[in-house]
Amino acid sequence: MSNRETKTDVILIGAGIMSATLGTILKELVPEWEIKVFEKLENAGEESSNEWNNAGTGHAALCELNYTAEKPDGSVDISKAISINEQFQVSMQFWSYLVKNKLINNPQEFIMPLPHMSFVQGQQNVEFLRKRFEALSNNPLFEGMEFSEDPKKLMEWIPLIMQGRVHNEPIAATKIDTGTDVNFGALTRMLIDHLESKDVAVNYNHSVEDITRTSEGLWEVNVRNLFSGRVDRHTAKFVFIGGGGGSLHLLQKSGIPEGKNIGGFPVSGIFMVCNNPEVVAQHHAKVYGKAKVGAPPMSVPHLDTRYIDNQKSLLFGPFAGFTPKFLKNGSIFDLVTSVKPNNLLTMLAAGAKEMSLTKYLIQQVMLSKEQRMEELREFIPNAKSEDWDFVVAGQRVQVIKDTEDGGKGTLQFGTEVITANDGSIAALLGASPGASTAVHVMLQVIQKCFPEHIDEWEPKIKTMIPSYGESLMNNQKLLQNVHESTANTLGLTEVKEQDYVYN
Image 1 (cartoon, rainbow, N blue to C red):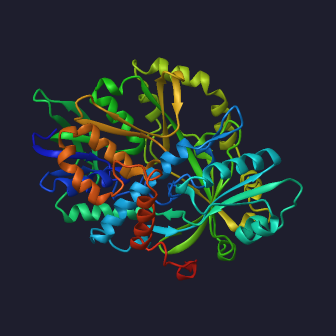
Image 2: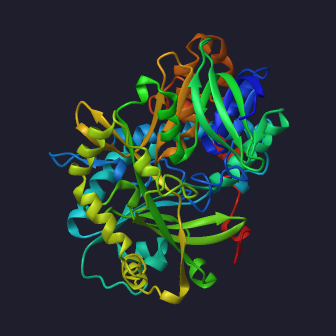
Image 3: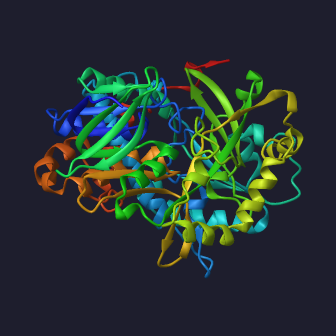
């Protein structure tokens, strides 16, 4: 242990999209604050934010069927879709502000326009999709959405999915052209580069070992240099734990009461990636289907056009998997060591409740390549095994906690922020929609953790995010202005598919 101790204003743990976003917002609001970032790996955005570790969907609820639940009376609840869409619009406005002010450049390196589609098979699912379309298309946030069950129209939209399809059951799709593909790895690296240009110290190969409260009310963070082995102590007024799946262990080490009775359940994923440029060229959309019964929402099957390193790719998945690691670069003891006396009953209750999920994950792990190909052929009937390889996606740790409506040990699917009562420390847990709503989530962190500054900061926040504090759905003029300005600034109206290389 080194005796060296340094003091700073803010410590960000993890150099992923969340820490990068929070650091960037804070540097705009209070440029004089000193910020330090500690990242265990060699580069920024290498875990959940990495472009190969997530689906890159700009989650705006345009195509994800799990954000629109069917109610017992048969109607479709679109409240969650509205909320997520508005949150994504916040991200778009902030990214536009950064580009407009030349804080980051070349938006086409991290965001591309891409139609978002939902695709279903079977009469019951077609009826659900029709009702969903009717509910959404009446809302200004989802203007421009189309619905069709005409095979000829679907052949125009999704030729790769329609070729070779036997029409022995009803099929339908919705399509909206304002969707996006987002390379969150590239965006994270841009934001971290920007922070470094503003004298933010980003320390790679530095692992946070412990977090404790000092008698003065500051947070002491013990950080190990993975090259030298030396452990230094850093104290800060505010700590943000944005370490992906690693956040739960660090939250537990902080000892805050809000972190008790919370557990985590890791789910891994595998994508199939197409290596045949002729096949890749035939598909231009993100197409989401319906999750199988018992599957977690993050396992909704989808066939995605991706733009990575200026090259067009095609991914299908994810197939769920299980490993006890909380991070792709984690330890096989992560799950076991996350079980504490205060969350043991919560974890046991979740285990008893989620037997169907456990069974589903075991079945997924046991799938052969050919069995996975059969699932792919539900989307692409003519898919050939030799055209597809596997890529292992990032780990997602779903939050387990006690809730009033779900009872003890309820598995949460979504993104959660746990904040100390005094706002001095916050941790981000959970999974999708995650990165897409990073700006909204980090603004929530700022509101909870710095309430005394909000009035002073609000004018600047409104400069960065014109819709801050307002509902876009209820202000159509503002919505139109936001749509037009973000699309223009981010280049979403100009870039054409043929501008990109197929490889």
